[in-house]
Image 1: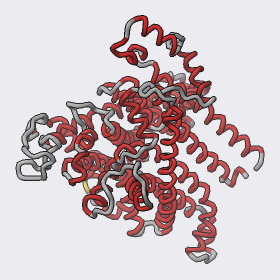
Image 2 (image 1 turned 180 degrees about the vertical axis):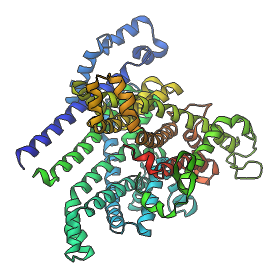
Image 3 (image 1 turned 90 degrees about the horizontal axis):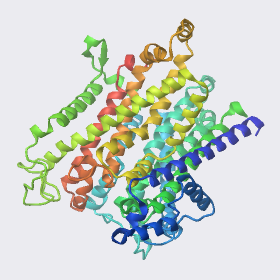
Image 4 (image 1 turned 120 degrees about the vertical axis):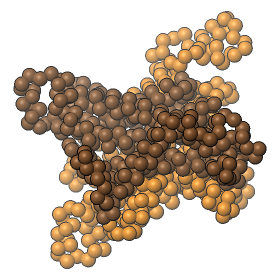
Length: 316
Length: 288
């Protein structure tokens, strides 16, 4: 790795860091500058002026917003996520197990989606213009153009209502055996796999087609290389960077999908926690969840960018 | 969204929009027809609905499709067809308002950044890129948590979420145009920034910008439906298509039509827009 690549990667990391600060700023101010006084809302019926005053002091609400922001950031960095308003528990305790659940869901989905999407994307690019390619393209555009909840409801209709293979709604609190586990994960994973595979197939196909159009691949063809050899020896190694980039980018669609899927299937993950927190206006919980999501998203797109930089042969 | 062009050119039919000098192919025309009919439905919904939207007309809840209730009835026994037709107003109207604001602001900012350059460009780009790295659904959730979800708030939120994308897109186009000789000439003539933007750059990027507006419209429809589905978008007694799916989700285990038809309405709209964009005449798409 030479110094040019290093400086590019470092500047990308720096940009990610600056972005994170701006994002945390946005999240904090969107949630705290809301109309209505938090202390009054929290106290509800018991909101005597003295009580409100006391609570405001205790929660540091009487300080300027910028100090509260700094206090919050310092807390976050030290691992103190604050206390939930709604159930008087430290946010970290609420999030912990839920976060692991969501990671499990995302991991299992990626395990299925990545191989499927890569196979479909690469073969569609190899057979460009064929009937197979057209079917794959139309299907992916179809999946991308419909809301995630439609894929989820369709999956329930097909697998639970008509085929009766799976229960319509899963409750993750009663796992007794491997089949239980399969039943719980099947529907959310099927839905999410559809959602992110479609993105991944499109991007992979585009990346491979771009490499297939380069002069050196044409040269390989002219030299008499067979089609598989041309694709696997000449094109794919060079398309690897863009493909991995595409995979990382599509995985970021998991974040949006997970919010819908966890809600519809009652999956006890962090996205469900956040949606519930929004309906109870539990701000510390919302802020922490939002930061976790933004961090995950930023991590994925930064990784994608860095892979793109590292895989660019012109920079080596 | 550009990949079907090669495949559809084989099926292209010489359909004449010839007065404008554009040639649409069949798929594009079908897309346009569906979009226009939803637009008409949105405008004239109160005149064409068979039953009042709020009235319980069927004795059965989650009723099947029947002669009286073409698309069945919902969880209270209200007519689904009427509710979907009225829902078009919210889905199409809110999305259209949001996409207009988003693209207008994004394109104006993008052109200003491209023409002005320097620190203004850097700061604007950095800031909007940062906004862009908040996942859109999350952004919606946070704002709704903070300010609640009235229709004006929804429109503003949706447009703020999609300004960075429109900005990035139009800035990239405008930067290319900005490097051309006729811009340099205009600058030497001493034209103002406003003139450069309005009369030199805008006419050269308007085609791709309109295509981009269509794609962004699809994103906004999907996001709005998603938020409504989570119960954070359009609030009762009004219901857009996403909210209709949410309120009838209890009918899913019985395969009630009330669950699928609002989703199908969304799909028909978004897929049509995609088809139209994919099959736009090259003349409009690639003017830059």
